[in-house]
Amino acid sequence: MDRNTLLLILLFIFVCVDMIMSYSSRCNDGETRSVLLQLKRHLLCEYDSEVRPVQTNNNVTRVKLHIIPQFLDYNSEEEIFELHTWTSMTWNDSHLTWDPVHFDNIQLIFMSAYEIWLPDIYLHNVNMEDSVFLAFTQTKCWVWKKGRVQWLTPMKYSTYCIADNTWWPYNIMNCSIQFGSWSYSGDEIDLDHYPNLITTADLHEYQTNVEWDLLKFYITSREETHKFNSNITSRLLSYHFILKRHWGIIRIAYVTPSIVLMVLTLTTLWLESKSPERMIIANLNFICHLLCMSNVHWEMPKSGFNVPKLLTFYESSFALASFVLILTNILRQLQELTTAPPLWISAATTSLLRSRVGQILLISILDPAVTAKIEADADDNADLVQSNSKKSPWSYVIVIVSWLAFSSVLFSYIVLLATCMPTLN
Image 1 (cartoon, rainbow, N blue to C red):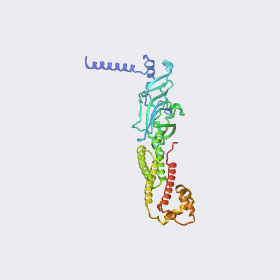
Image 2: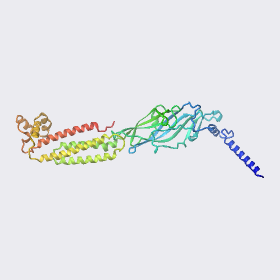
Image 3: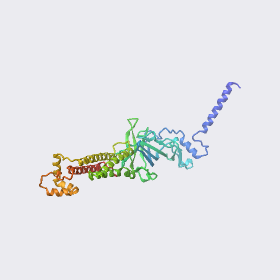
Image 4: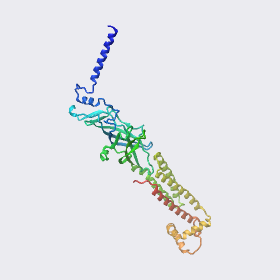
């Protein structure tokens, strides 16, 4: 056998093998026993999963998106909002249609997601490091005889959500996840939510978070200029989740101590300046403020925007506690003085003691004996501050200063409660 004959034999064998392989891989193999396999080969014959399945390019593919939340989480330190869902998308594929009469009356077929065209609907405000499309291409799609396709898969979405800490720890957040086509314009893919209204059925599988309550869940849509082409627009679908922090333990840990510290500060001012109890409570109040501020500092979120009002309340209360401690020390020193106060202080004190306000608000409550002396010497111009030799010449000055300090601190706390104390809305 010469060389040319051997080459002809090898060429003949190659052609025969190629014909056999081609015959066995034909799309419409009538000899295949499985009708389901015949149908699948019929549908995927010359099918390209990269091409949008429309008859003409002007036709719009309408995609219905449906999200069923399973559970969520929020990382306060990194400001990451995570949502675990069942995600469903439904659309019509004109290339995946068949007549059930020719295929043993098969109405529905399951196909792998990687075999057919899928709309490229992705998160636009995504945190790329944490978002996971679980088993994206391994899931199955339902395909009906008229070309309707439904794809259902578990998803984990992760996005940034900056918190507003103004009313921490009773803050409410609006965390959103935004969907849209990654490469198609709004004229090619029309994205919509299915169904049009959110019902309680969407949350029937939702598992309550131990830290956050899901107050509300709603959807908005808008048109936006495409990220890669300013000449076209795409439709974005946003899912908004209104979260509210659980308040029970937080109220006991942070809000209640602030009220106790306020009462402790006012109690210090109510006590007599020379009593040792006042000095003890003033120092204890100062130390408690430091401890509470340190606790709030370590527990409150370090990110977000706006300083928490509660921290402003603690800061202001700490300033008032420091003022009360300093004032207590000053008044105790004045109590020990034996020299008479300056004339202008003595005159001002005497004038206040003789006034109706001094008699009603000060003398009648704190020193009834002086009230009787004022009524007896109403027309006497003698200095009341120095009228009793058994008391310190500064005693009435100290009483008046204490009363003014108590009124001022009380008014300051009223303002702080009205403007800075977080409330459960």
